Length: 119
Image 1: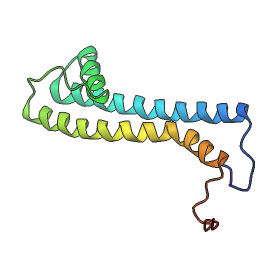
Image 2: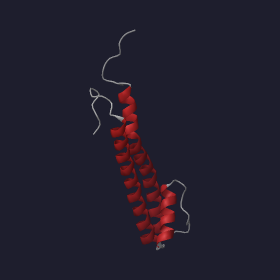
Image 3: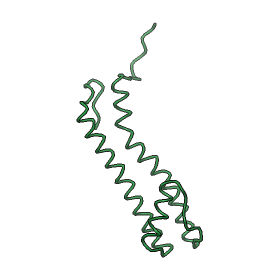
Image 4: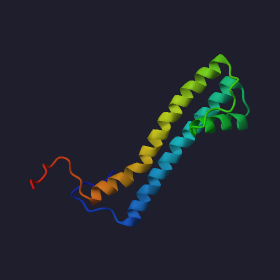
């Protein structure tokens, strides 16, 4: 997926395309996660679409749920979804930052396998 250390750094245009691809993947991960939250709140709490979206988006964004009067099954779903949302934030951030970090390391030719030259 990424160029090898023996290859030159990608031109800016191709890097921008790679970054856009990763942005779209990250947005897709977030959209699927939001859909999971909406469906879960509709199923377990019988919320309408707008309230289910609000609760799922607030949890996914790290703000916490809006409705706190939940059924026992809804509480379990909200807890599991909150843990999942925290992980998704880390995953989506990693997917988005991977090309930037790779380009930075590739541009300075960071190679941890080769021994350091003595000074």
